[in-house]
Amino acid sequence: MELNNVPERILVIRLSAMGDVAMTVPVLLALSKQYPNLKITVLTRAFFKPMFQQIPNVEVYEADVKGKHKGVLGLYKLYKELKALGFIAVADLHNVLRSKILKFYFKFSSVSFVQIDKGRADKKALTRVENKIFKPLQTTHERYGAVFNKLGYPIDITKSPLLSKEKLSDKIVDILGADTKKWIGIAPFAAFKGKMFPLEAMKEVIAELNTSEKYKILLFGGGKKEQKMLDEVASQFNNVINITGKLAFKEELALISNLDVMVAMDSGNAHLAAMYAIPTITLWGVTHPYAGFAPFGQESNTLLADRDKFPLIPTSIYGNKFPEGYDKAITTITPKEVVAKIENVLN
Image 1 (cartoon, one colour):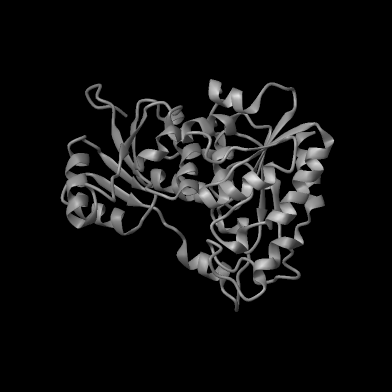
Image 2 (cartoon, rainbow, N blue to C red):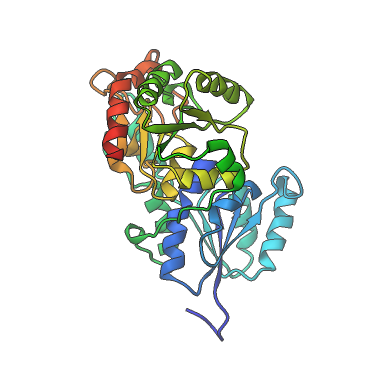
């Protein structure tokens, strides 16, 4: 709805982490498509801006929480900046201390402010040791959608379009070279040990794929330590390239958008690939898709640890807590199963 031909402006708050920010993309695509006259501003880290560049009527406003917007006074300064932009509603998709402080400031204005229901009680029941209630919970995408519904913008995320393939830069073309092989992305790391397929086991997967000579395997990681580890892996195979540290984030997204398949843990790279409708295979250890964090539209591409052997899965939402020995749960997924899943998805 428009008043005097002035489009309505809403603010969306999702500051971090990368995977959670990426999960907003399919929802905002649906919102933008179903309400084409709505102007949407996403309050997040400047680093994440390339994720939103394809979404019509969406712009990013940087939250400099380590600089000028740090602390209570910094957040008040941020509130004053945001208030001047004339938002009629705020969708808080984060619901943390910083956004709660912003909510406190906004309550003195006439702006509607709705926060995400994270379903903490249901998640606690799903992850507890005794009297565990093992059932699928509302997905994070659905929880995001519910916020817009409460603000008066109901959306059908099942009809969400996804991002288009990005053009590859000359730098990427130089790194990858020219051939007709299918591109397999592998992101073998996760924030916590209980979520990560052992690197030696992943090397078995890579060795099998490399031998076929049909695939180009691209390794994705994070920091310097991971880069060094993946450099060592790549050096052992003729069809493997480590991408870590070679590209800017925008270029890395473009490369991901051109993959034939992505293999990842329950981690951010999985959600980046899913934004582009890339077939995304996820490996799950002490966490579980029932908590609602499966990549968008990729529910059939999950490989799960054996709950008969490890019945307390999921042991936590983020994978940071697990009983002794449960860090081995993900090893009940075998390298052969991973290879078979990749080839099944590709063929």
